[in-house]
Amino acid sequence: MTPLRRVSGRAVTTVEGLTEDEQSRWVSSFLTHGASQCGFCTPGIVCRLVGHERKGADLGNREIVDRLLAAHLCRCTGWQTIREAASEVSVEFPSRDLELATRQATLESDTPQIVGPQVVLGQGGFADDDAPENALVAVRDQSQWYVADSLHQARELAGKVQGRRSSLEPRPPLELPEGDWALTLRTCWVEPAYLETDASWCNPQDEPADPVANGGAFGGKIASDVTDVARELAQANDRVVRVLWSREDTVRHGPKRPPVSVGLRADGSGIFRLARTDHIDERIRPLLPKCEIEQVTIPGPPTSSAIRGAGWAEVEMLRAGLSGQAGWVTAPSGASAKATIANELISVEVRAGSPLDWVMFRSYCIGAAHMAYSWVTSEGLSVDQNGDVHDLTIRSFGVLRSSDTPEIEIINVGDGPNLAAGDAVFAAVAAATWLNRGCPSDLPTG
Image (cartoon, rainbow, N blue to C red; front, side):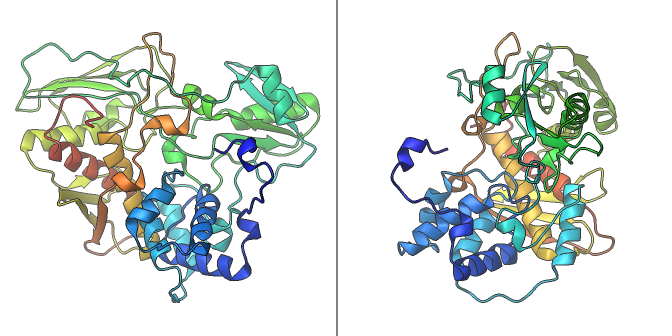
């Protein structure tokens, strides 16, 4: 984010350089409010907030905190819990059962998760963190891997040019089906935008490091090849090898939710056209039994039905549009949610049993709500007619900033077995947002 020339001659303080009191207060506040999930972005955010706290900034003022957060991207939390943590950092908080919080986070992310002070301080155990210092480094260029003694050397061999943003506007790649429709919907290519890029490392005699580590990647890393490549290259070189995707790699080669183009009649019949994606039919057909599902091959990045709500969230939007109201949405986990949007407030009722830990349950629900609202209103990738992606930086994905995000209210309804609620919240808020915007044909709605 910051060119080295801008810090020439200056002192740089990382989260390790904060005072013991600063670390203690901010860790406590972030844990209390669920302001950190995977934790990849958290140390930078904490350092920025502490830096302005030292200058006497009023961190209870949303406008000030929004401005500070504009330099960051937190995909998990939806910003709100971070703002809450900043506004109450000096308050003394009650202790929590972090084991229950960890179990709640693991349920929601569908992968082993950690909740604790170490996550806030950047020690969540990401895939590349524990790689030995003398490991070789492998980076890719299209389908070929280049191995060298350092990341810089590997990038030079691969001819990597880091990141750029296109002047092309994102646009839906599929034309609408011909017909007289009561409702139409087209979506763009969209980046899942997980922050820790795919990474693994492997000793020739051992198993590779898990690329998911402390973050679920919203389904985006399920089919990642970095573990297989790390194993193969470690054995071929008889050395420990780190395998790293760049941000460009995640955008070009990482899976996306399939773009769709749909025309529906008032009775729910019609055509649901989408980019060819394995196992996507089984998510759509039960919800739109009268609709013809048409998969087509189009140039562009790979797609996956594992991405959060892929296919069925779009169906729930269409069903809300046909009925004229956003009703209860049930996710594959069995959890249900219903959302309303009014007066700059997203209100979400959730039926997901009795949470093991309310703070993490609420945090994950708020994050899912932000992700859905952001997807419908502002997210998209610029992909040309040949299928080449032109938006290769985090800034170009269209993820909503803190300042543009409405307040989000989570209301838990009922009790019973604890269920993962994030996907239900995502689909419910997507449906409510599209309905609130008047059901325009093309996403993002702006």
